[in-house]
Amino acid sequence: MKSNPVFQLSFAAFFAALHFYLVAYITSSVIAERLGDQFVAPLFAGGSVLALIVFFSAPRLLRRIGARGFLTLMALIEGAAILGLAGFSGEIATILSVLAHLGFSSLVGFALDLFLEQATDAESVTGNTRGIFFTATNTALVLSPPLMGLIRTSFSFEMVYLASIAFFVVFLIAMIPLYRSFKDSSYNNVSLAGMRFAFMCADIAPTALAHLSLRLFYALAAIYIPLHLSSLGFSWPQIGLMLGIALLPFALTTLPAGKLADSRFGEKEIMITGFVIMAGATALLSLSLPHSFVLYAGILFVTRMGASLVDITTETHFFRAVSSRDINSITLFRMLQPVGYIIGVTLAAGILLVLPLQSAFLAFAFLILLIGIPAALRITDFR
Image: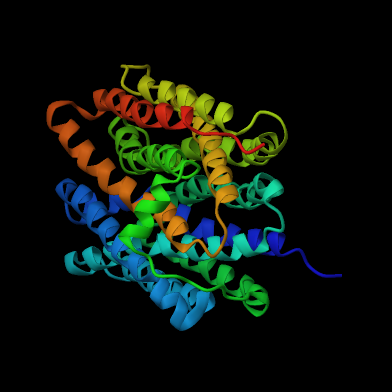
């Protein structure tokens, strides 16, 4: 009996996600600890600029070495970067490793998109297919912070990075059967003109803007929420468990939301609901609240409830409109991750010049709504 490629890919992506998410919430703290707080925003911005440069060269590499070779190359660089963070704590080594990690990790996700697009049989079930995939990766997202907290209870940050590498090796092994069956498409060059045309497409532009708003939230959350919780006196094991609880919606709601987007409500209604929930809960972090583990875990849970709805609906709507050959559109969409980091850390740096971190969360919530809601209102459902 032939194995289902979507389930095979989802299994492999589960371990890739464990690798990425295990270190996602500690990198800003590692930078601050080794180099100082003033290096956090510049390094995240620098890594994101590097990612954009590599994205533009991706089609040329894909034509030369194919998606399998491209994924392998990106994985080798990412693995070396994480090993650098685990084995070397010097300033230069930390800077180079962080830049490489931030610059190339998103390209692994870009390559997986090509595999997933080929594994999708029909656009009418894109929501269900991507729901299966993201349920796997989001389960890893939920498990990673508590696991990180457990490791940090007895070991240093370096051990967290070593555990991350172990999961990455499992991911690469799990990809071997998919390597054998994958067939490369023709990859056109990425050009500013082509991306401008893709962004002007009525089916793509509002979805891209909505996804950019989500990426802004992810960037701000990954960098500043752990720092905020640490400043409030929560320990790293507490922060890890809190984030694990908060991220449960990604595992619980992604598949049902994808199916509903396919059959009943459409992406627009679910997306708008997600933005309102996400921004409202983010604004609550600006208040002076009791020092309660349950309270903060609950607020973070609600932020991710909204984010999970926006995540699956923007992904589903976008990938209904494109094919695996539409390299300009896919590149544009995946470039929103580093663009979101660049815009996020730049705006946050300006906001934090005039507001303390706690109050800044109200401004963060406003930014999410300012970009996300108008974009979602412009979306036309495919169902």
